[in-house]
Image 1 (tube, rainbow, N blue to C red):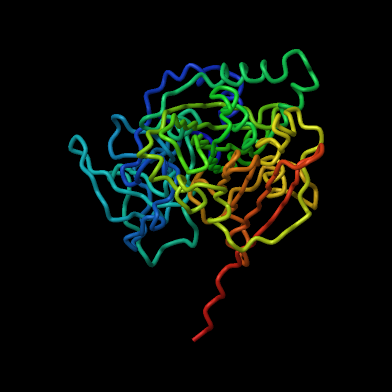
Image 2: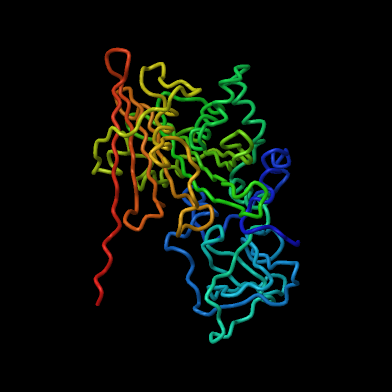
Length: 433
């Protein structure tokens, strides 16, 4: 397949958002990267726990590819059952390999490593890669292109065990129930940030139990360039897990997981272009981690995950959101607190609100860099507790920024709202020898 896209994805993003080609999901489930572990803990877009695959040290260049074609990079060796996750220009140089090889149908495939690929690596046919002369190596890296969102989005949402859903129908059903004929409410829902949109969609379709823990993981990739119609656009990759709780911890279930991809389309901040669902077995939930701690521990998980909180009054709840700010129990709704933290995490020029962030540096393509845990009535008292951790800040002095909002029922009309933050500094640079 010939690909003439700019670097990264967005050549077909408008088609994805407006057409219903993906809504029907006539796409077989994508193969998970065999190098990754449990799909509930990792996914095809996550880097391996020990970092990107190491290069064998040599550099390679693309050869034998016509000027108007590309060298495809696939998620697994071979053409059958694989997905194209990237492509190299016919004159690409400085391609790094891991030294791993695989033989499929008599052809040899080589494993390519790069943070520009989902999961940090992919496979290329050996016939089109040749070792470079180290004395004639230009000082630049290869530019990886993405063929289209049509292959990469299902690669995220349709991993093993997840059932593809009709994204457009699921979204329209939620919006109809939430906004009805209220055009102003519909307009406000169109501005809802991706994490909040994901939570609202799940709670609409799965219900809102009185005690539950949600785990959200978010990765964002800026796609396209100046040559792309409309310029670069972001795509969000989200996983939302709903874990039923009691004051003593996780129950036997049912537990549910959604995976979805979103992109801005016209006046909609985040349009859901791909969606899948699966039930989570209790034994699998017991292996999951939330903010670095076991997901099945009782009580507000933020108390265990981060002991060094500092009070702050910087954050405020959204002004007149389209969803209820308070629950029937008299505490702030999960959506209100999650929105407050998400807005604060990506504020620009001191202004609170959702601003699509740049692709984080040092993170492989689409990998999750933001995690949030929403605890609804996690203990004996009526409360909503939301914690967010951002681990990709493009800031050499900081490695993580945490934020937390807790709403507790109190006498009177207003609940008690507490907000806290924690900033984890980067380790000091080693002294020169």
